[in-house]
Amino acid sequence: MRFIFTCFSCLFLTACVGDRSDLELFVTTTKAQHVAHIPPLKETPKFEHFVYQADLMRSPFVPPSRELTEEVIDTTKNCTQPDLKRRKGRLETYALDNLKMRGTLSESESIWALVETNDGSVYRLGIGEYLGLYNGRIAKVTQQMVEIIELIPDGSGCWTERLSNMELSGG
Image (cartoon, rainbow, N blue to C red; front, side, top):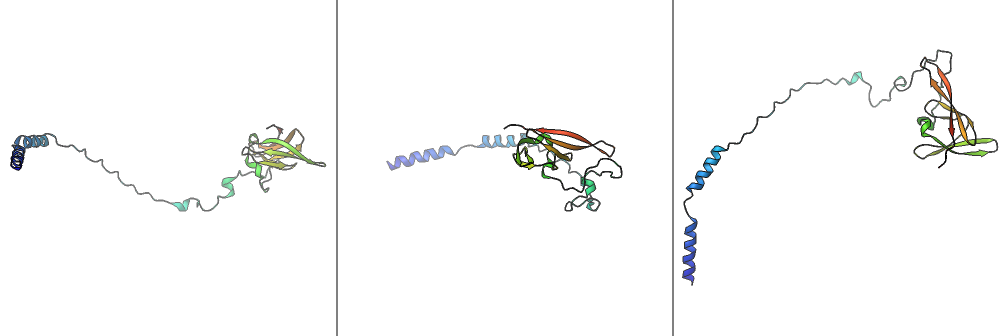
């Protein structure tokens, strides 16, 4: 039995060795016909040197001067002007449209308005306190509304007073 197995093995192995000339011809013709085309690289852009002159600009680490951040108001005219030396209140960064009157608090003769900002914070404000973007000062507080006197620039360096109301609004 071993002899027969050895004979079949030799027969199969001799069948694998054959003429490969047609395979080699196919490979050489395929390589000759199909040459890979690689497009040339784009020309590199020319480098342009830039001189950074930071000495002509304001340093980002120094706060800007008052003239750059605030309106420069001509105080030489004899007309209504806002108090520039007054420290701004916490509600003077909100427009009046973003504030809502939510109620009042009172103690003997004093009455305060409860004002809510659009981020949900509630503040207690009394007569003479400021709110709004236009130097709005509270003139009167009642159970139903707050009267505010705002200073609006008129374009000629003077300011005119405008009366605004903030009415009580529910939940």
